[in-house]
Length: 52
Image (tube, rainbow, N blue to C red):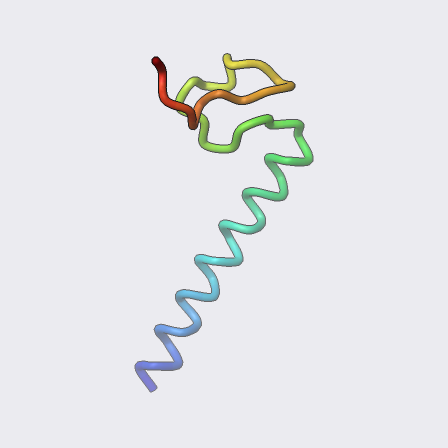
């Protein structure tokens, strides 16, 4: 019974994450979760590259 409940909780979390990503992409977000606050530009995101 506990396995079923834990499985449902994981399913709800994954579904919520997928819905969030889909909504962000539809709204035109270039980098979802970008630490630059989307100030890096819409065409190319450099938020995951190291600064040299």
